[in-house]
Length: 247
Image (cartoon, rainbow, N blue to C red):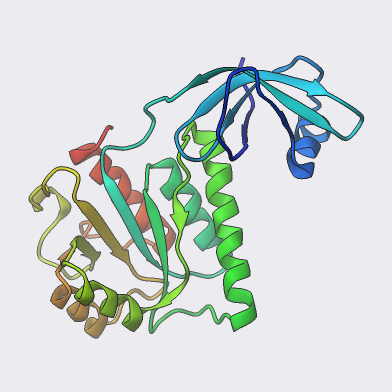
């Protein structure tokens, strides 16, 4: 039987009792309809996994009683940053969900020239928080115990400037007209951060690809078929995990 998992931040200790936040209590008691003494797992987002029991304290409240604490090795050996041009509607949600399942380390949302999503200042942080919640849910489902960070939304030009300030990263930019394929890319040194740049609907402009090259990223293509933006990122992550990671 699959054990239900909850995200509960904090430092865990054996025999510790943690009061479930309102949302988590509602999910456990009303959505999952769990009963007293039901076995649960909780992770703190920083690598710890706790196994314990649900202690029902009222119709709407419950505690989590920790019995055992472990540090399972569920994180990819690759340090993967997905630099993703923001796409419309649930396409971006899908990209984030699947990228987390595939072991991404963090996600950098970008506003590029062909982005069709227009966000006002008061909605930028709200959207980032929504994506962070999707990442947490994906960790609950996939068994990860470390939550990837969804970074603050940046304009493409700002992100490029950040690459020139720091050491040039090992990176790949997806370009359907590139000569190289992933299979021909030389594996980077161990533990080095890998940046993967994906455009939104309509892709990156020729200038944006050229600017990415100047920032140190290598253009690659995925064969003769052009993938949708929500497919491209997860597809490349899966290939990299197969080539160099833990697949």
